[in-house]
Image (cartoon, rainbow, N blue to C red; front, top):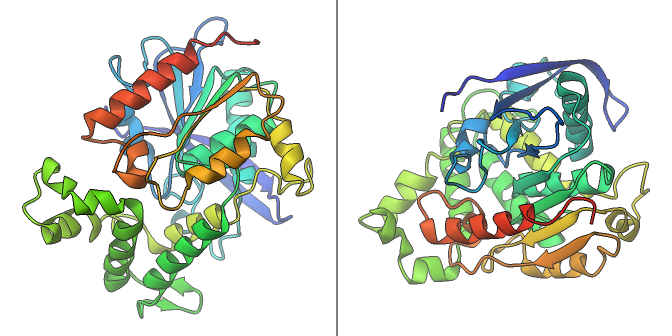
Length: 340
C-alpha cells in the first residue's frame, strides 16, 4: 500500500473553544469500494502520533478489516502532521479537541461521499476514544463501534501518565517559550524510555517477550523500538495530540454539558469494548464502569484481549496471537444485524 492520501479542505472552522481556524485540512485515505447503497463504510481513526500508513497494515482481505467487502476510510487526527497540525499551520496553533476532529470528519463523510451510515467505527487508543465520541455524538449514524484499548474519557491515571511523557519531552533545552524551536533529540529518547515502561506490561518484560520479535537483549529492544519511535514526528505536533488526549471526554460539549451518564446513554450502536487485559493506562476497569452505563446500546460487550503486550495488544503488529483474537471479535461484531 502506498502513502498517497487526499485532503479535505474544510475552510474556516469555528473550534469548540470558539477560536476560528482559518483553513482547516483533514488528510484521509480510502480503501475498497463504496457500495451503491453507501452502507459498507468503516471509519478507522488514527491513534497517538500515527499517520494512516502506520495503521493500514490492519486492512487486507485476510486481516481484521477487509477492503474487498468494506469501504474503509482512515481520517488522520488533527495534530498528526498530515491533517492540520502545528508543523504545517501558522503559529500559534489553537487547542483542538476530539469534538473538533469528529465535526470535520463528519463533514468529510457527508460532503465528499454523501455517507449517512457507518457500518463500523473501529479505533485503537486515541482512535478508540474517537470511536466512542462518534457513537455518542452521532447515534443514528453509527451501527457498530469497536473501542480497542480506549475509553470514553481520559481517566486521571491516564492523564498522569501523559504528564510524565510530556515532562520528559519538554525537559529538552529545545523547548523554549512554550514550543520547540528545534528537534529535541534528548527529549525524544527520554519520552520513548518513559513510554516503554507504560505501553508494555510487567509480564512482557518479566517473560522477555521481546525475544519473540528477534531482539537480542532488553537494551537492543529499547534502542530499536523506543528510542527513535517518536523522533519521526514533530515535537510540537506530539504536544498538540497529548492535549487532545488529556482533555478527551465524550460529555465535554454543549450537547451533554458534562453529563457523562447522559452521553453514554445517548449511544445506540452495537458496542464492543476491547481493552488490553494488561493495559496500564487504558485500564479494563474504566470500560467495566462504562459498560453499565451503555443502557440504550443495541448491544454492549466487554471482551479484554488476553495478552501480556499491554496497550500494544490492541495494535498487534507482528503479534499473530492478539491479531487473531481481534479479528474474531470484529468478525462477530460485523455479523450483528444493523438496526437491531
